[in-house]
Length: 582
Image (tube, rainbow, N blue to C red; front, side, top):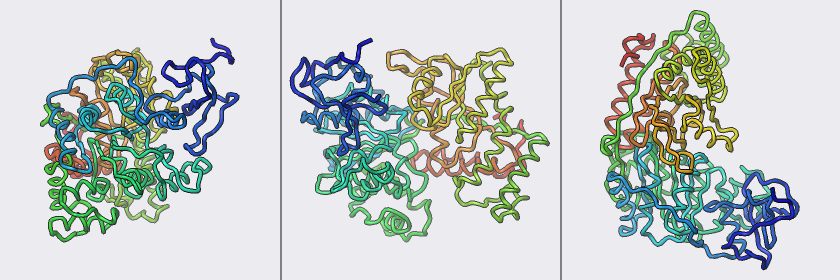
């Protein structure tokens, strides 16, 4: 191991082999080391100044295509466009179904469109389509906003792409891209810094294009991340960048389309809306074809209008699994009967909750909807009680699938549910004499997420229990699953949903973790029959159908509505044979 006095320099660095003093920016998590300082103007990045980088810090040096590498190059006065890497990889060939989508993105240059919305099923290769679609454009700098779990895939892809300044960043760090006059954002708590950047931030570097992967993260226009992206897309005193938005589940209601209002306005040849929230935005949408708004967040006439503008007017495209020649999602309902003791526990917990909220008149009616929004946290936690009570039955179901030769993905919403399910599954695997190694992936311990994902993908664990429902690939046969060229196992995957996934986008994202890239992974929905968990699942299917209608996936929307109706019509509990056997 090198001692503290050893140092390293990269051949392409201005200071390689000696020379003048330069800045070396460190990645988050760097160790304490003499000489490290904080650059408060660039979001508080840690910097080492010297001709050479000490060996002890080499592992923490800014990685290519990150915000930290942008800061380092800017501090050193280097050109915006970096040098070509010494060893360039080739990107995989495009699939035939990807080519028209690539051409659609390329056409925005000729049409003058402000951007493009790419809607395609999970696993359809949206990253590859976007990178290829931008390859011929004269763009010096491109920002990619994506979730933490997807960053490694993006970094590998852009590293093999056209030489330009790529910056890949997760939404929680967007504020670091801004400066605010007469204010040092690094001196503020992160949320306060983000608020200030959203209100008055000026980008450190004006990007030529901004890509928002998993663009459903912008569904709520008043959220901090939405406001920060809006600021990037409408920079003061600078030309707006090209906006590329990609998602399998872009919106669940008309109100959530506001982040692509500029695209809609271009297609409709009208001015973008001055207000992008609430009733005023819905009125603007309805007026596009002379309609009067009925105040609905899902008015079908307006839905058809929006789909026409977004997918048939040169600012976007949508494709279903069938249109791309990919397999449709198989969904199976598996009701679980709680035994008498657990049913009593559940009923008492639910009744106590209703009483505490002055809703006890609903205690005898499991079909009633005491809350308009199924994502409300407190009632949802009470509904989740059924998820915990049925954990032994879920474990038995999962172990049977493992015994039948499957690798199983078990998504859950709350971390407590994840831990409970993982414990029960491990115990049942051990009881049955099966390999009992389970990987648990949550939003905690981010540095362990990728190693654990790889352990599942490479077959070292038969079960993955996770609360990460977006931005993680768990499908069979994944190419380059470990970043070193190793292919994931071809063991068939199965997804077991044993927790209520609220909202239409989330449920569909859950299904697409293992069912993607042409690989089939049937989805089993386990729910406690005759409880509010069944009610919530029925509503989730309904909202998911709305999401699919807005994505122009009509056939899947109809399939989801059939499941919604089946559960809603049988609130006393569907029979195990009549539903689970499908």
